[in-house]
Length: 86
Image (cartoon, rainbow, N blue to C red; front, side, top):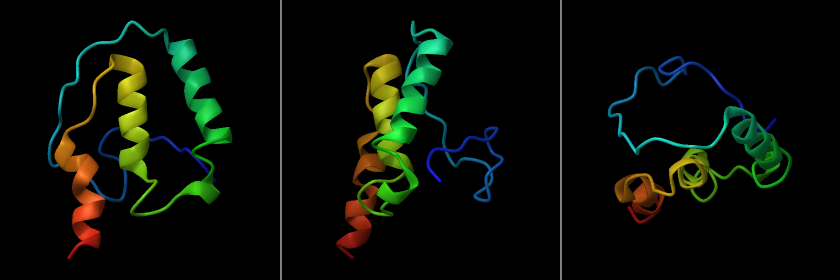
């Protein structure tokens, strides 16, 4: 298994604690889907998942950069490392 999708707030984790607006994109939906499918066949195959080093935050960072050229908040990027250092 690789990349999966669901409606916002519909995971087993429930509603997000915070929503951060990163901006708007000019990327057409078809190009976005192509990008995500390619990621699912390469860098985000199910076998590449690592809870602390290659996870949903890594995916979100790459997608945010592709769509908007912006990063997700640094505290989200740093969270796995903080857990490993405890």
